[in-house]
Image 1 (cartoon, rainbow, N blue to C red):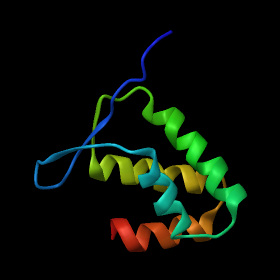
Image 2 (cartoon, rainbow, N blue to C red; image 1 turned 60 degrees about the vertical axis):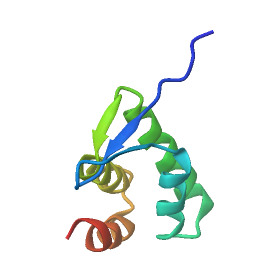
Image 3 (cartoon, rainbow, N blue to C red; image 1 turned 180 degrees about the vertical axis):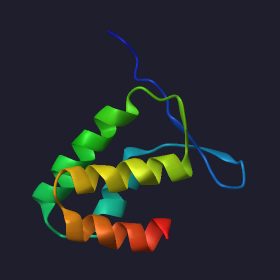
Image 4 (cartoon, helix red, strand yellow; image 1 turned 90 degrees about the horizontal axis):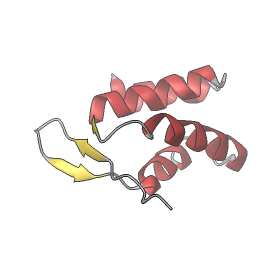
Length: 86
């Protein structure tokens, strides 16, 4: 059985922190209480992150935004954009 790959996030100041899946879950919960939206979006984001060892914070935020938009949660994507990317 293969061990889970570790993912690190490079913050804007260059500091590296370990990625925890709860980060995505909590970010999505701050946008909506709809558990189905949170679950679907979270799963798709985690699949996309599987190919990374290190990701910049801005790139991670863009993946979250694009995933919400691709799933047609446009209002939630817009809210996320204004809170995290603008």
